[in-house]
Image 1 (tube, rainbow, N blue to C red):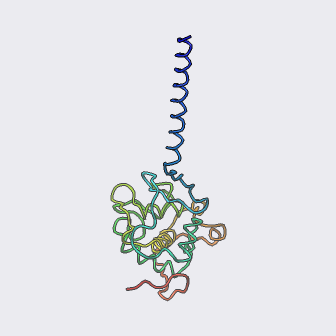
Image 2 (cartoon, one colour):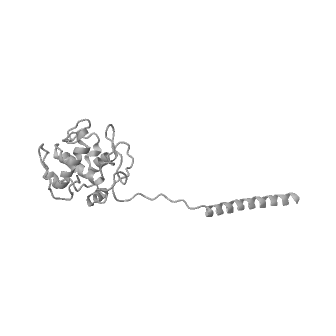
Length: 208
């Protein structure tokens, strides 16, 4: 009889202990703050990545300004550069390219210390797209190609890209940055072309 009683008491103690453990865990779960769940990435917009590492670029960093223009907003959303054939932007792009890029890539983007940018061979294939070329300018690449986000705003980068595309001399079928209508009007760049300083368009003249 005593053994049965002891056995029954032992079972009750075990059950009580288990119940206490469960209750304790429940109280702990209630008292702990809920952990924030990771939010999903935006379903729209372009994600810019470093040309070499593939890491995501933070386009909010760098030189102030030049992020709220209609062209930049459109580019960040769709990857389409509205400045490609705008003469007012080509005028600015030529000047910006001369001061920021020509030292390494040549005055006509023919290549110098850095690779040429005016034919259909690209060191980084992603640069055939304007989003890829923007990423390379913004975040840099290998060799001497450092990031330019401290001396060019995103809007200025789009103007530089428009000029680089204007200097293109390769076959039109490889100019994937052009839409169908632009391809119909495409003419390879010829040295000596002059963009009027008073050209009208989306881009205001650069401040001197």
